[in-house]
Amino acid sequence: MNALKKMFGGNTRQFGMIFALVALIAFFQIATSGRTLTSGNVINLFNGNSYILILAIGMVLVIIAGHIDLSVGSVAAFVGVSVALAIRDWGIPWYLGVLFGLILGALIGAWQGWWTAYVGIPAFIVTLAGMLLFRGFNQFVGKSNTIPVPADFQFLGSGYLPEVGPNTGFNNLTLLLGIAGAAFVVVGELRSRSRAKALGAEVPELWVTVLKLVLICGAILYATYLFATGRPGTSFPIPGLILGFLVLLYGFISSRTILGRHVYAVGGNRHAAELSGVQSKKVNFLVMMNMSILAGLAGMIFVGRSTASGPFDGVGWELDAIAAVFIGGAAVTGGVGTVIGSIIGGLVMAVLNNGLQLLGIGADLTQIIKGLVLLIAVAFDVYNKSQGKKSLIGLMLRNFNRSSAGPSNPNQPDETTSTKEAIAKEA
Image (cartoon, rainbow, N blue to C red; front, side, top):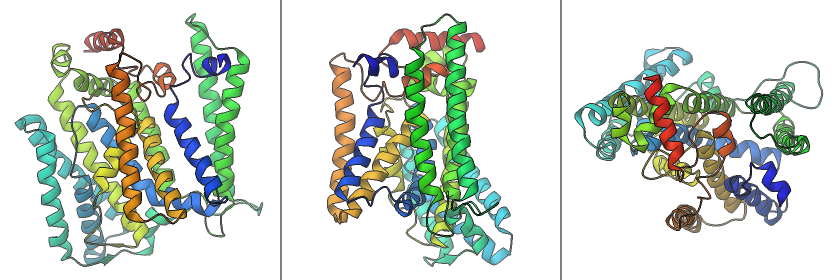
């Protein structure tokens, strides 16, 4: 127990959701007789859920800021059908189609952000209207037909890293990517340890750091092996590559930039943030616009994977994204949440859904189980907070927050105060 406390920064529960994810994978691996951790299933799991995880990245910033976006599924569908029609009817190349989709998403986000930030209508109402509005636009523009997209565009949602170099029996680019990922983790951990020593902070024993790195890098390299040994023509999927880039980008923005700190401040206490010089209207506008941009990207990835845009694309996506964010540790009241936590929450739902499908569980029972998992995860967190205990989900990944100067445990008012003071100095 002492070893675990040292490894996880003094609290063995802060990686609760990671443990839950590992436990789910282990359970389904046994229950499905080894079918869960096969190359084909892992690749399909990433391909089938990448667009939801991308939505979760944008949704966590919206929820941290104290809002919610119900329109993301409809926006994704509208952008998807618009891009498919533009490529087919205007004859533009696929990359201009992607640019067109991102610009369209930004315009939609600016529209909804303006109503929310500057007119003052609650985001729940604005995006509820947007859900109806853009669902109607999707069916009107596409005339409720299926619009195919060319093979070049399909690569965005169903492509893989190509084969390069000598024949090693593995996909060489996937191997390099996995090795680079493990090296990134090692360098980041050693740099954090070095900074802590320089600041005179308590540093874990060397064996604890080594064991932690062995576990994390072992998981990365095993996943790399699964991706690199799939059936011929497959490797690490392009949607996974896009997702990984977005996780790094938005993890950096949310934890290491002034804008990221302002999002947390506005969600934690808007009036206090404004007194500190934070432009809350600008922050709300940007998070809403960013959400629609990512929704447009998610819609295009789905269309690429499906090879065509359809009238029922995006149905229920907003609920999956919101569930991923709350399971990942975000607070309903705003001010709390992490990008990494939301990805882990999304993976929990993805593994649960995938495992139940492998077991032959029907769609009706699958929805019931997913709903119960969401309710229990949030209820347990709320109960701990009401009892004055540290939140299981709120403590998740606190080490990452500490090392990146991001927001920490929401149950510690002194940390919130220090964040506000930092904002006041920066302003």
